[in-house]
Length: 317
Length: 190
Image 1: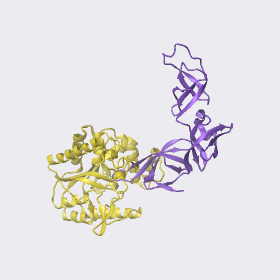
Image 2: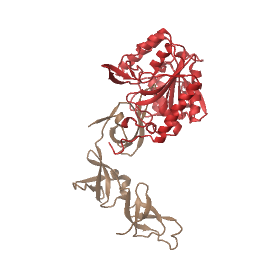
Image 3: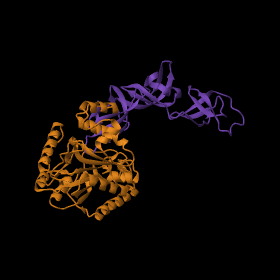
Image 4: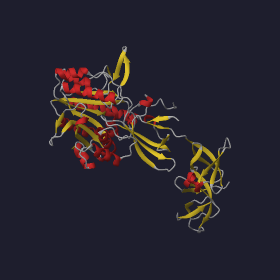
């Protein structure tokens, strides 16, 4: 504890910029008739995402989890017929702290009924251009980026070819587990910085990184996840899907996630079976996307670290 | 020895890697939203000085290195070893030429240096940021040159060669920044 540990880390100017950004986001969606909705941040169910850890707590005598995203709750509202909606509030992820991560962060997540991922990508670009005043937008597929930068097809390259590409590009203290880890390493160490300064929308992810997106064959016949990510200057800002609506497939993916977590020694918590029930009852076809608001503020204000835009980041929280 | 996990890595932490003591320069937490978490760590090998980047899986750990920095007075060089003394305990340490490395050209007897000890033995020596040394050789100063702002090489008592203003003469003392090798000014005689 030092004499100034009571003080906020972000400047007051940055905090005023935050307030203006939140107002601008709310106005953007008000103009488009997308409804703001609140969902619980304390949930009885955890995420099952293989690489995201929920923060666990106790509430009214039983285990509870801080929401890692509002996704499950918003989808239950969509199945109940709420229509186009968004959440702008806190999300929590265990262990994620660094220059671009704080375990408690502000997330914007929205859903558009009847849209697919391509149409939602355009709206993400509209929002980013409005806020950042930047207009250079490139859309390219996951495959195109890998081919352009590494002369490698991420869908068809052999495990061996991927592993030797990783070995060429970086010095690792471990041997990658599988091709998905190789792809993550190449993306985070090599490709993000090759994207350039503008807005990059990357789409058609490998089928094994589908998370909750539909998997559909692309023009070449390769099954791809209809998932996209938005980057600005190589900083990952948003992740979206043409949403999976098939309840049986949703259940299968939850079970596969749980099996993966068990195999890798991660905590296995009860998964959100009420999402499966909601899909069974019928969720409208839709596209949804989650965006990191703190990072957007970093970009808008030219801040180097996420701490510069949060009054009390985790060390001072 | 203690172990440090990637989430404890921070600049200045000393760890063992590939059998050598290393100092962590920088640790960046990297995690694609839906992907695995990694730590991209920039390290300096304390034996060789080489700086490079290695990626760890988040949560992996490294053994700590028994490395510590001590302030010590430089005593003398016996031709093979450089001798240092801890000011409180008067304990003496001898450092090899390779441990002293480039610092040798700045070492003046009785100056206080930072000696990095690895398993109790000197691994590296960092000279004081500023040293005051006598000029032992330089071209004669020329009258009237003071306004020109030119420089000339001067050899100092410890063997270092620095650029000094033209008006300085052999026997004068100068203050030098050892990190950049830059002349800072003429030192007042006292």
